[in-house]
Image (cartoon, rainbow, N blue to C red; front, side, top):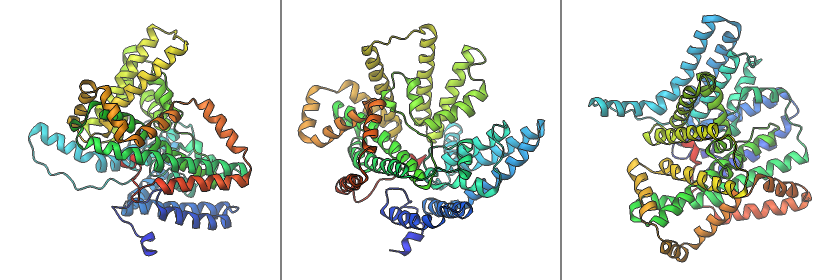
Length: 481
């Protein structure tokens, strides 16, 4: 058992909700207290643990990750010193090198299978394992190189700082995508760890665990049943599955982000928020400002704006928006379902941008706001079906059932057979549609609770998690990306 903690298993990657991680992390924190006041030893200690964490997640692929870090560091210093064509060439080579790993491991089979399909060839697919977190740390690498190229930031002062930034384990395998300009300054001036910071970090971790283990994983069981054969279930059951997956993916991913932010705070570093009440968005543009914020900003700053943004006329603005969301879809997965998902969001963003161009004054009446939220949520939810389904056929079967085979009787029967799912969907709805202002008021009240009662609250939360969690914890959804 003890030996298993230090070995890598492809079938059991390490993640925050594993008991083994929580055990080892507890030991890590005890030793961290011994080095926390020594900047250099603290950096080395966190780097070593981060590398161990990545090894437990992706095994030998830690070597590829190390090569990318080394190349980034070297390229960045040369890029910063050069000008003109040499500088552009170095940027091109550095980006090509960073992207090469992602293109090979994530997209080579996609291109081969489509090449075979179009030309009738029979090239064999590669038997590849996708290194966990490669999409996240590749985008992080690109943002660093681009920011150095634009001279928005200087290169990292020393190799240790850059390794620390790239390997910092809370955000390593599933984000948020962290910018060097936001994180590197914190290495020299981390947060001062006070009682208020401990409270904030513990609350984020507990809330994240509850989101993942109490809500997301339980709703995921029902979603899995429906998507095994959506045409075998009523339209109402498929509709509730759409709602369930919409909540599942939100609580799963935002739960991971909460845990990552909480763990980083425990160590004295602050990661930026990745979600801002996205299902309360009135339109699709607002949704993408609130959902997976670090990816949305990355796509804006490194795809949309470099293409030309809104500086080259209306048609090009819409084209660049479409291309940006197409890249966003492909980033999520090497499958035409994700391409379609990105295209659909791109078209929706174009339509909304066009609407606001011709009708710049939007009504502020409350019922228009509610209508906007309902329409946006259901549009996003329908497209989530393509995200979750195993194929286009399965996705369209589910959507067809929703629109052609839904009746009120379906919901009556569902209430009789699966009341616990209805309760959880209702509970989830209250959480996701409550305004951020009200949520913050509740959080502020919790912070005022005396420290002694915090122990009781944490104990209750942990008991709820242990009571309802499965014996087998499902990996976070975004691990596959």
